[in-house]
Image (tube, rainbow, N blue to C red; front, side):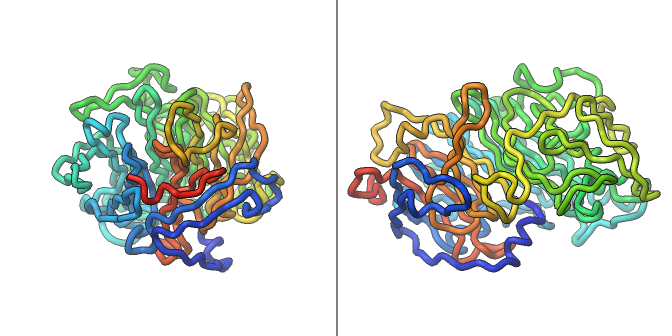
Length: 499
């Protein structure tokens, strides 16, 4: 995830106590003010489907099944299923490598789940990786034992809601450097054509760069201190949004329109968009195919003329293939300064229009596509509608209203086409209108009652399902939860007990 989260936990939390099955009535007035306007006139009801560490573990990701059951995961490798009435069972547990953010990272449900029952997991397989930290300095031989992968695999979820561990098919391995912190990414989604999207982090250590861009090229340094080898590398799968078409046999094809055509030298054709630091949550708008990404930015408290911009974070709107700048540019294409970690001297700012990757760790093209500016960048209180405080953007779903859907709890038509943004540390959900030209429109609060937001998705009933991380780092606690937020405008009863 990100260092900002640790700051959040140190700030102190007032716990929310509730039990699974509890229903909380919400109204526009209950939204956190945070400098933003009230939500529209709809009223909402929040249903607690699962509550506490025993039912959620350390919450990581969720996906809603056609029958309104929710599959959700814990970093320790546990997969759980909670039905529409709030009964939770363990579906299975896979063995995972654990170090910092590694473990079971992402979850996706196949668009054809009703017939094939496929679910996808993105995780860190055990392998033979040594325990503990990888050395920060040394030679290639010292770092080699920590070479690993994060793996995208497909499993079958059986009719009894248990995971068939023997059904695993490895789809794609993403090579990573283990034993150093941070940035895994790991979200999974599908577009209307059935293409699978996977977000991956830059797999780079941010703690030795004074909060600015980690581009340490020294030969005796662990490569994990240079994000040019990953996010800025056209021949590497890290720091990217990948797009593939998975076949029935578990192989995959490359859909037309990715950033690099198959066969392009020094590139990976799986790359749809590059230049991300830690795109921890993303979603695909089923109607337009636009990908919305919450990308975590660096930790510098202020801009520096010798290093570059401060700790800007951003929501990106990926309407087509492109380069989103990291580790050379951030926000509205504010460039970092080329810094020599060996001498402690600064060079010139990077050229966001034509970034050049001349790192000795780069295995890809040296001239990169032009950097695209962020859709919504923010830093501290720079955007009044977002309030102030921690900086931890989570990209939720886009809502698409279905007039033919017979559901008492679906969100109203007035939210059609809105992007639902979340903030882990600031603890809000906001619906953001999207103008016809793709620019952002009005931003308003969606009322909810909980702690730190980890994931969200709209279900087949048109209700919003939300995974609450809780308040304990690297572990679930009494605040960890799975909720369903229902439209309660003019409705007398919850669908908690519905078939």
